Every structure is written in C-alpha cells, then in structure tokens.
Image (cartoon, rainbow, N blue to C red; front, side, top):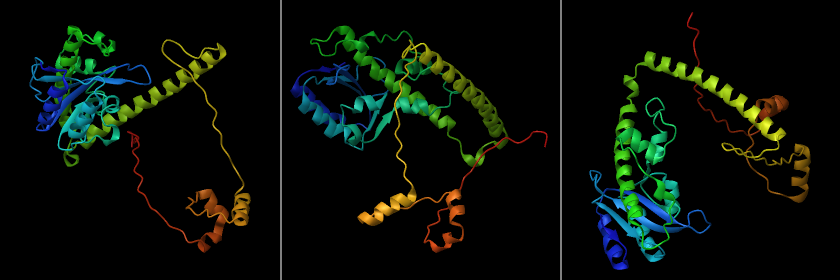
Amino acid sequence: MPYLNTTAEIRSQIPRFTQASTLWIDTEVADFTTKNPRLSLIQILNNPQDMTGDDVYILDVLDQSSLITDFIEQIMLNSAIEKVFHNANYDLKLLGGKKAKNVTCTLNMAKSIPFHILPLPNYQLKTLANFLCNFHGIDKKEQGSDWGIRPLTDDQLEYAYFDCIYLAQVYLKLLNLQSDITKDPTQEDLSTLSQAYIAVEQKRKLINSEFDYLQDRLKKAMDIQNVSETDYCKMSSSQRKSIKVEFAELMRVVASEGINLNFPITLTEKLRKELGGNLELLDVDIETTQVVRLSAKDQEE
C-alpha cells in the first residue's frame, strides 16, 4: 500500500502509470464545502484483481500544484489510458476538466443499466459495491473528514486505499451487465420484447400521473403554509421574462436601421396556412425527418 508524500517519490511514480491500459482512480479533497477546494490525495489502482490494497498508490498532492499538473498532463490527457472514476464529474473539476480524455464513469454506467436488472435506491459506490460485489459493512464516515490535516490518520488512509478496490470490482461487474443487456437486434424476440415494453409503458403512465398529483399537492401545501423547505424537498421560484413583438414591427425596425437580421425561420403549419399561395414565392429549404412511434395495439383485434 504505497503512500507517497514527497515530491521526488510522486514525480518518479507518475510516468510508471502511463504503462497501464486502465487505471482506477479516486480523489480526496480538502475544504470541499468551500469555494476553494484543494486536491488532497489521488488514489490509483492498476491491478483490478487486487483485493488487499497492496497495489493501490496514494499520492499526497496537497498544495502541490506542480505535481497535480504533471499528473493531469501525463495521465488525464493521455487518451491511451482509460481512467475509471465514480461520479467522474466531481473528480475532473480538479483533474483536467473537459480536457481529460478516455474517462469512464461507473455512476453513468450504472445509470445505463435497466432498473429491473439493477434495482437500487441510489447509485452510490457503497450501494453498488454492496449489491454487485457483496462488500458489506463499508464505512464511509471518513469521507467527510478533514483531508487538509497532516499527518493523515490510519483510518483515513485505509478508507482511501479501499475505495479504489470497490471501484475496480464495481466496474468489472457493470461491464458484465452491459454485455448481457446488449442484444443483437436481428436476434431479438419481438413478441417478448414488445410485451415487456407495453407493461412498462402502462406503469410509467401511472407513475407520471401519481407524480404530477403529489407534486401539485406538495407545491400548494408548501405555498399556503409559507414553507420553502422540508426535510426532503426544497421549493424555489423564479420569473421568466418573454419579450414579444409583432413581426411587422420587427421588420420596420430592421429595414429602417439597416440591421442584418438573416436567419432561417421554421414555418409552422399555422404560418404556412397564413401564407397560402405566397409560400411558392419563397426560396425554402425542406428538411425531412423520420419520426418513429410505438403504440399499444388493441389485443381484441
């Protein structure tokens, strides 16, 4: 379980990670609730079979901007290396942002799995590790600890090591699930598939109806009781401003001021009717798109 906390150690180790095809990465952030979070640790695993933490490297980069830059340039911007995170958007804020290449997010992978296959209340790493990998009793109390202190406690280091192990195992399980649900369209059982679709569609309509009903009740109740927040919900409001003008008035200003206002306008069915035969006087571009809809058939037909 190498814990590297000197500039020389970290700088010499980063190039060795470039030899890996896949890296499982996690981070710990100091002052994460403030406007100025600081990257504290970068944890890296390059052996998904490791279940002990022996192959997990912890790079202590707190207030070491040059080391963070080295890691971003050599690892995060390297398209040849797949970087696996859970909730990657969070980690990427301090590790290259949109410039990062070949990033895989297990949170997004989990969300792509149908609910009947992955029936979970949430997609937290702890929940996925429990359900998919039978990792029980995962203690996340150190997640919110002070990662800006030095030295770090033994509990903090142990927590940092094992998150990468959970991440790698969850990733492998999700890969298997994705391959199981990826079907060849030419081999699909259309009868079974369509029955499943209609059953889910009917449930969706009921759920949407119930959702709208409860949302309307809750909004009205919170508004009348002058409550903006409960233990479970927060209600906010904002004003939307729409600026409208008569088309003839717009054209008058454009013509009188010499404004170059040239852009395509979609002619709705109403506008086409208003134009009538004058439509033929216009130089129009016609785009045709294919719209495919599924609908339930009357089973008594």
